[in-house]
Image 1 (cartoon, rainbow, N blue to C red):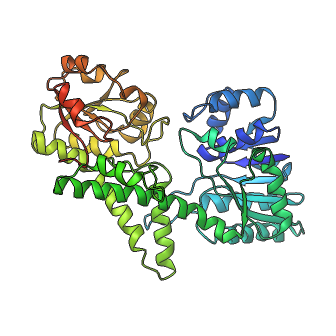
Image 2 (spheres, rainbow, N blue to C red; image 1 turned 90 degrees about the vertical axis):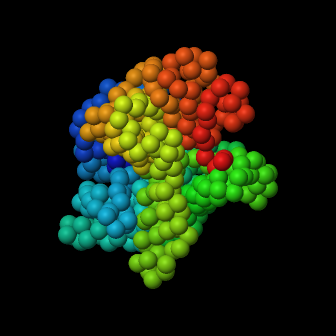
Image 3 (cartoon, rainbow, N blue to C red; image 1 turned 180 degrees about the horizontal axis):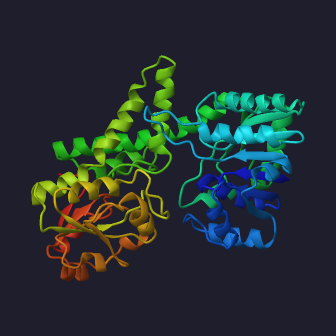
Length: 441
């Protein structure tokens, strides 16, 4: 099939590359000319395991191309994916201006029957707006061209996106008729060779499924983080509680790890957008509001522990921070807990020396670029030199089995703040560390 993917961000690029991998002819489009030129040269704008090799392979094989000419790409496609950003507005709602701008371009450019796919995470009712926008442009042109708008939410985990796309748990498609549904079924057939995970439904239910899924996962995280706060106060151990409840098959172990808050491009934005939608329709989403409030507070937990230990005035103190990205195996720092922790410490006079295997450039050029009290190094041990304590924020694999004796030699004090409960208190005591974790008194 000939496919155009408008938007080469995380979702658009991964989707385009994976569709090309299955033999489709895919054109990825972006208005950022520099990004498109770099993609043609094999320079990938995001870190995602396996993405670079697959992009280079398909570009070389000519199943994948890149362009800034959206009209030409759309004109030659039977399926056009809208995969542009939906940034969060000040009121928490999803901003659809980029989605509707693409819809307008599609209406201006399409020449024959087309399935237009909302791949961006969009509120319930967006497909109607996309359809109306396209139809308005066709009316202006005075042409009668049949088209369908489909909802196809993505459920990719950053750090495992290629695997998730090629071997999906489910593919959710919302469509108005069997014609569009069958086109999408044919597109996804190569991904269903072993198990049919194709789930068809109406469009609004498909739009809602994405928000409901992310909000459910965020709820599990915030629930465990709230339990961790109660555990600290009553003298229980959240790690043992997690094992106790996770063994219940109705609960399971996924997304019940206490930590210093969730981040990323999806959970914070989607929880708030769904809450805003609920309020727009006259419903008070008490659970969703609580999920977000708990997460907001949780991001301050580690910095508060540091301040309790060292005092409000941190002049002359240096802290090593291990991990900047919101989760391992990505360079994404959107809504990352590291930003809150570092800013809270440096505004009290502290210096921070940070190390992350992939996210340094994001921090330096964007998220922490105006913070003069932050410096960056190229290894986890280099960050520890003469630091008053180390703070683990992102649980990258290389932090799992460090040389604790070497750490003690480099640090001023053997003090470890663990934002992901990666180690046990007994183990850290045996190495002579003063150890602070979440949900343990």
